[in-house]
Length: 119
Image (cartoon, rainbow, N blue to C red; front, side):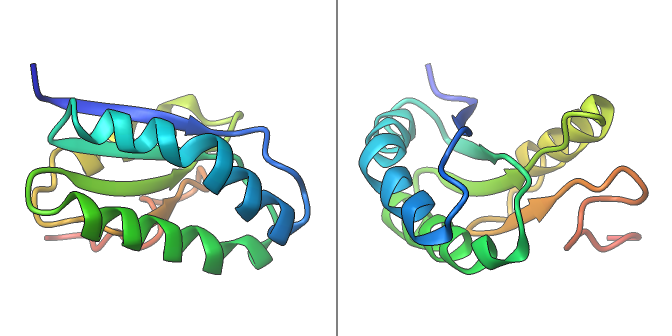
């Protein structure tokens, strides 16, 4: 049955190049399998330094292009200290049919970064 899903891309190395390599080898096959079972997928990342943003966004955008039009793929940088914010951001992504290929970050003080209030 198709619906919403998520994949954990957590526990990756600290160095951006090593993290990207591990993501592509270890996580991408799981994501591709999940794409076949769902119409909308969120990839959950650990919070890390800003140097990881570029490779994460590029990977999510490419996966979203591969999955289109049958599945939307987005990323979410989760915060352990904010499970409520993580759940709200996940719900936002699952309920926003026009959003794909994006990586949002939960900071606990505001709506997910990239979220436009009033829309």
